Amino acid sequence: MSQGSNFVDYVKICCRSGKGGSGSSHLHRDKMTSTGGPDGGDGGRGGHIILRGNAQFWTLLHLKYRKHILATDGGPGSSSTSTGKSGKDEYLDVPLGTIAKDAETGEDLFEITEDGQTEILTAGGRGGLGNWHFKTSTLQTPRFAQPGESGTEQWVVLELKVLADVGLVGFPNAGKSTLLSVVSAAKPEIADYPFTTLVPNLGIVSYRANKSFVMADIPGIIEGASKGKGLGYRFLRHIERNSVLLFMVPADTNRTITEEYEILKSELLDYNPELMQKPHLLAITKSDMLDDELVAEIKKDLPANIPSVFISSVAQKGLVELKDMIWQAIDADQTSPLPK
Image (cartoon, rainbow, N blue to C red; front, side, top):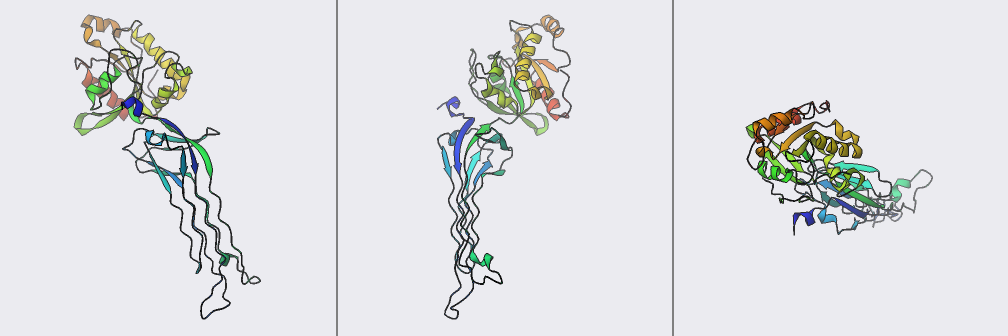
């Protein structure tokens, strides 16, 4: 099975937490006591449904066919004020960058960003109180107890937004996959035609002094993507999670470098203006075909105030300078966006 068919970044599931166990209305009896007081224990809590961050996961594929997630009910209370057994919690491991939403309202419930982080998605019902809670000076032997609280059933959407330090932004065939394959251990599909990348690919890029950063190859933008054209929102939501955006424009573009950069930027702006607050970098790819004179000419018309570098992944040109530029942007104060 190819990576494309394995990558799932959106699932809708029905979650039903466990019902709380009923409290006991037991009255204490033993061979020495025939008319003892209430000693009925509380019911056990119903099982929660819990999301747990797992850094080993990169897709929601394992939940695609689990449409109904059920936790078990709590046990009833018993004599000697013994509390019933709690229902078993149902843990769902998800990749880092997963957001849980209420399927009906679209409201964000929480997000999972750390390995081992746990959040209750659907809480189990509380156990009912046993009859010993209801004993008073005027009611010495209450013969009633509380029923357990019902569990909760709700439809939830889980949406994955890839977490990476730097996201590669560019039109199809801009050389993003090639760059990722050269500077990291990732092995994305690469071919000389548009839309090779249909899912995000992640790669860890080694840097100086044993440092590293995560680079994400996002499916290529086409004009109108922010309005749902082409792959549309499917890839744009992954860009939201990147700290730095590296715009990639090939040297052989039919437009000027600045024109192509402005179109890419416009697509992101239409989708989410907050993306403009992230540091922007520019790499002119496939520059091995340029001589020094042509490079100097192109430099005159590059976008102002955006750090830029000429690279060729195939010829290994400019890659050290690119990594230096990326690291400097990642390391900089993220609250101060670069000038646009």
